[in-house]
Image (cartoon, rainbow, N blue to C red; front, side):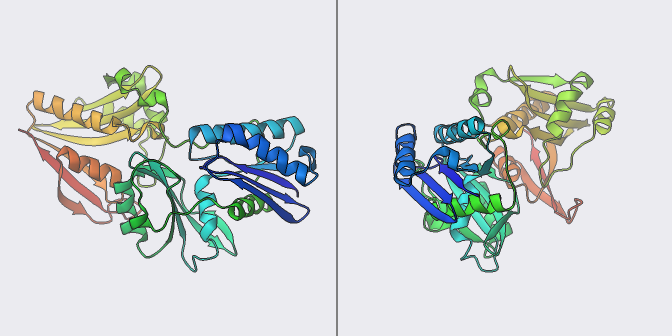
Length: 369
């Protein structure tokens, strides 16, 4: 199979051609993709006496990374594939970076990490066998401090970490994660060909960018509205419940509605003018308030939605004369644990192997003034 692959997800424009069993590669560092991609591509094709019609499929890196860069590369590949009725092979940036170490991480999974700027990192873990990668987790975006907790607890000395600064402004984490690596041409060609060999093809209509950051709409916190929820909001609540986390136990619609029948149960939501972005449910008992459930839509995380929900519950609890607020959190839910600590909750106990997956439950409370 002959494949033309493009990456515009980083500071460099990368082109990898697999044609008649051989690789042809070109790269332009510190490239402005909108100006340089087509001249570089045309020059590469002409020098090798090739046309777009010579290819059986087109490959592309779909993110995460630069919004503009990803859109440029994917739009070009989608255009080629649509016009010529050819399939697309898509890989993500973390997968591409992991291929840098696929021959070096002997007997260890590969933990791929990319600086996302603003104190955030993208990361994903892969198993590998005979030079092929298999994801052990989904691509994630988190604060660097949360990621370090995850790294030290789950993967310390158990995974080969490969890190890319990716030219993002802000702090360089290479002192913690090792020397920064660039996306490599040989990794691009190898990753795309591996997926082609496995028959992992998409079409030009359905392939889409992999964006892990919140959109501008979710970031517009000025438009957020806090309100009390009821059974009429059950559809929006269950839509949020469906966004399952590894350490989370989804509530059913029946259980949620039954809880709403309890006069001591209250559920609050936060939304913009488009959709509900999160909710929190509490149980009031005498002078105590217990936080039972908090969910934030995945695409709206890391912009303070959870903090706003909890602060509102703290405010209402004080107004209603409560003396303390209780909650429990999965010991592996590092972002939530840190958020609670920053808001003033303290750990008061643990329930070993409390959850179905045998994770511990951390018990926390806040004493109100």
